[in-house]
Length: 384
Ligand code: PMP
Image (cartoon, rainbow, N blue to C red):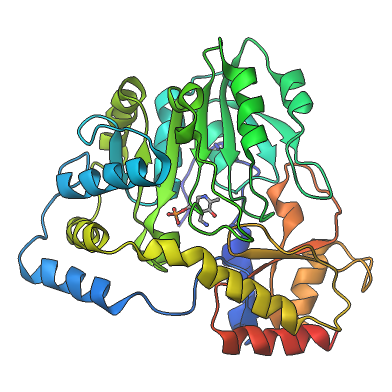
């Protein structure tokens, strides 16, 4: 069957995401899948039982549009405890169906036709389509090698009277880099006295290594007053398939967020919200997450001793970049496919996170996997 008229695509350059493509390729070739970012170990048993219990208790109908109050309250307390930030549970937080939906809702709330949105490249793949669907114009600035840092002079140069939003992401996917106190001060200097809004993607807030501290924009009042801050339960509780997240913003921004949020999704999964509220109120196991993942990162890198890959250990997130320039001159997109087929390990080519193809010979590997999986992958990678 065919729709009789030709429709003109709203996202003509967008195909199936690289995550779907590489995961399907990994399945088809029985390769170890270190491409898509998801853990292959299970969620805490207590949390699963709580969800089950909440369902049995009959908490299965629509939750309030803003999210279950108890969950909003415990998350506000957490923000206070961790970052000293004060958010009002009624007016300044909304539970969402994942970080992606929160990002989409925030952009939709504020971006109009012709508005410019500054995006640091490489950029997580949902940012640009969400900007473009809202008529916004992505303006790109590239992170600087070798440590994938932000050159704030580059950012200053591209600010214009039409700059509506700056998007930041720390810890960073795919580069595994983190923003520092100095970055936050530079950002403050740039936005103070302007109407620029920030969207700060902090879904990996609890995955940060080597004694570094997560610098949330909420710690900086001059940033927090203009920021939507995005978090995801998927990353913190090893449950990417739940698609549960939340967004903090000052009241005036949150009011606009809710205006669109209620017609994009209205509300999110009820029993999960009740279960998470109870779980988080008596357990702060997220504090152990950095150590847990640092061990995974170190274990993975130890497996690569003697391999021909070069690397700098990731500072945050659960992704490790490997430089394969000593192995082949192929483009990363070609090599990622060949490695999956011939060597049995799937990864993500980092060039797909740029609007123009670049050739930096870096592949991204997800180390949120059991030691057994990482050790098998290491063996295969060392054989190359
Ligand atoms: N931002 C970044 C940087 C991510 O890596 C991800 C998930 N891969 C998201 C947002 C989306 O989170 P969620 O799965 O909760 O939609």
